[in-house]
Image 1 (tube, rainbow, N blue to C red):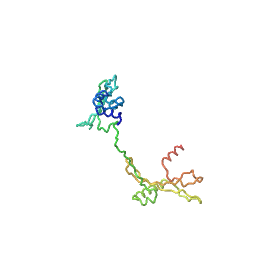
Image 2: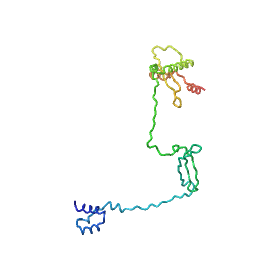
Image 3: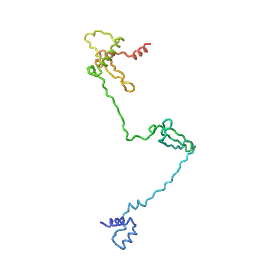
Image 4: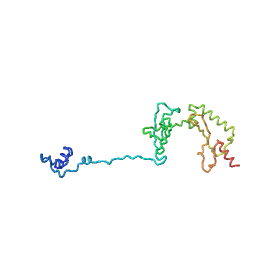
Length: 231
């Protein structure tokens, strides 16, 4: 151990006393060397540090709504007539006017602490509607789908949606397919089975009636638009 560490060690052992007191002890027991080069003790510096006093200041409102005190009171042992268990008080510091707002539960507050350990719920519904006619045949609701298809065919037949003709030679007609959908209400509950017969438009080839629309389905909105344009 060098003289440097020897002086610092005795300084710590003796309770961080000053150099003068260590010299007095050294005169009786000369075991401490190099006191003049004793390094700065960080513990002594921290012990001598002081903080400025904190003077409390009271805010005084000079006009209405400059300072408003609020507090949440509750839960009350006896709820109010509206089953409210809490109430919020608002006190204006200038006029000392106080008003109270009843609250049913603390969770009904518009501004409240975040739920730091909450969980975000995410729900999704699988699309189990059949994609093809083959899937419809093997579906458990085959009877319902057939009724929906028959209802659609009857509707298009009564409305004279199409006219049966023989296709010209060398021309391939645009195929059709059934689109099946389970209709749900606003509350997510099942309402009905729906089936639509639509043309497979992507089978058309450019240059051969490509701009024409092949759809055996006539919508009421389309008729309204055409009538509005014609008139």
